[in-house]
Image 1: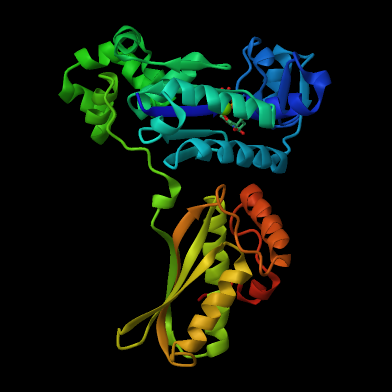
Image 2 (image 1 turned 120 degrees about the vertical axis):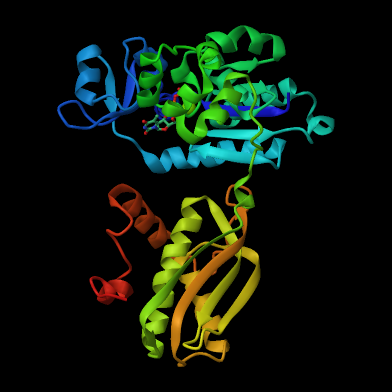
Amino acid sequence: MDILHCDLDAFYASVEQRDQPALRGKPVIVGGRPGSRGVVSTCSYEARKYGIYSAMPANQAYRLCPQAIFLPPDIPKYIKASQQVFAILHRYSPVIEPLSIDEAFLDVSGCHSLFGSSTQIAQLIKQDVWEETGLLISVGIAANKFLAKLATNLGKPNGLLELGEEQVREILPLLPVNEIWGIGSKTAQRLKQAGIATASDLLLYPRFKLEAILGSNTDFYIQLCRGQDSRPVLSRSEQKSIGNEITFPQDLDDQKEIEHLLLELSCQVAYRVRHASLIAHTVTIKMRTPDFQTLTRSQTLQQGVDADLTIYKIALNLYHKSGLAGECLRLLGLNCSKLNDRTIEQPALFVDENDTLDQIIDDMKSKFGIDTIKRGSLLNRINRKI
Ligand code: TTP
Ligand code: MG
């Protein structure tokens, strides 16, 4: 039983209750305000008793519980808490797969001699998270990812549940299909129409008929219903690289124009690196000449980078030293590789004034869409075809 699934309880609402003691024990709803068209991001377990859940319209939540305390989300505060929690998880295993801001898988198969059994590791994680962040985290333990996540959900809140073979044999057959990881409400509805309400119903149903509902995922779901899941825990750093490239409609030899495009590529790639909570140790540029010769130039850095202008400076330097500056190109690319998790390594801040600007731009991009904001130096390219 080497797979742990960890998920903070009522995350955003718990952070608010932690910071404002008057809110503890009360129904707290984080998200849109009643009277607006907003929705509930999450709510405290006290509010869940009234039937309130994530994504419910705020107006409906208000009707169910008018005395609830509605709060707007404070995303920077939640990101800080999330980083603290992930730093704790990294103490107990190097093999961590983050699933969301408050949720991750850990493979602890290589960690027992250091920290004890899986249950002991789960206890240590819960204790550290509580003592250092004041938040409760539920942990599920099982032989694979599907069962570990199921264990967390069954144990919540403040859970620590190990699902051994015997418990799996008891619980799994009766598991409603909508609680099987990956089966959304529409698919669950179609399964129910076919008379499939539970995992055991699904296993008894003829495979060829099942395929009409589940398509190419049929065998995967059959395996899950048997309690089998062979997917490994994949840490983010196993993501090999993040990159972008542009093929020009016409060959381009204007050096200033190419430098401009390099800045644009740097901003796009750096944003994706930061968005995945990674930092890069290698920056590579790729250039293709009109006769289809492809040339790459790389720089590997001891300290990881993730800032727009830091990556741009490196890329620009590589371009100038490539021997192709001012030459005609048909393609330009930029790639970041040797990626590390940001929670275990801080990026280099040698252009630190850009960090704040990057953060503001990232915030706006995640709130209003990736194309809504650009650096002023890129503005003259907006609406122009590359
Ligand atoms: P979850 O882990 O799904 O929910 P939770 O932590 O609030 O509650 P629990 O795990 O105990 O069931 O999501 C983590 C955070 O992500 C949540 O606190 C708020 C945010 N979130 C949204 O903003 N919208 C959503 O629809 C969901 C599901 C979550
Ligand atoms: Mg959670």
